[in-house]
View 1 (cartoon, one colour):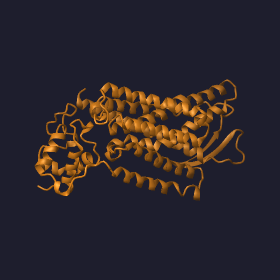
View 2: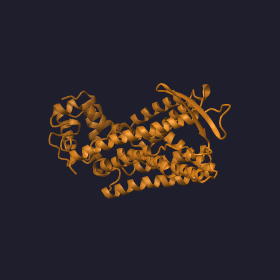
View 3: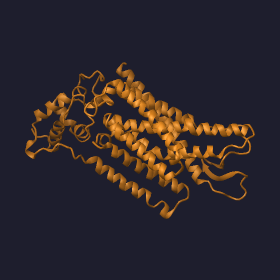
View 4: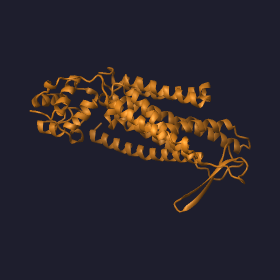
Length: 398
């Protein structure tokens, strides 16, 4: 595939993914807010669970919710499903065009596990399917009847998946697959449970039958899961821009912290929208802040970093030789890597001046983050990373 054409496809898919994702998250957040803000008031129609009054855009809105269904169907019924479907489809297409098409650069890291391109792709695809199947079985089991035990089970499922991904794929490949697995679970909840259950309720009403209330409860459970998973999955999906997250030796622990922090923030808004005040909402955001501090400290600590003596600072020529050996396959006026027609982001290391001008980028991406070289295809060693880092921190002495 022509590189420029691939870039345009990537851009179009990313924009479409962003648009549909905003639509899905927006409608999801709105309906969760609406559900939690419903209040019982005198004079409501029979079967109405609660109502909410809203003002927006110069007008007033009055919404009622039936816990199961109204006694008769209105002429127009608006469904909210295509946002979820197209978010997943565009996200999967991005996964294919970036991580599967260029698996050698973005998905496979020989220092983690030597995989063929086809093996890596099959593992990735299989994990998305397996994640949904296991999750669905857990929800339908006895565990799914208790909210607390189900939450723990789902957390453990994601943590196990994260641990396995980080021992199979590159750091960025592992994180994107954690996000893709969670996103698949969320979209499958809509496609396999929420919408089918709603269709069964509508069919019962059309047939003059009383709908099964269990259908609504099951759909509500899956919708709640989607709501709490949204904030963590958003960070997972942009994690490839932040190497301090995915390049840590125990990055699966970082996944766990992201799940907890995102869940706490979402719980704060849900509790507040439900009318909670005082002690009910005072602890979530401070706890999330402490979690964020722990995340930053953990991500910044590398117990396996190579330690060098102060007097072992390498020369500028030695630093240039390392960078040109390991990095100019891509970052050069004439890249040797077939995946690039020009230097990524216009960053080149063809001479010492260019290396010095981009020293902080090298420090962040190749030393602290270890995200570069891509897939470590040039086999940059930990000692070389430590030497480059020490040279930069020492002020790049001659």
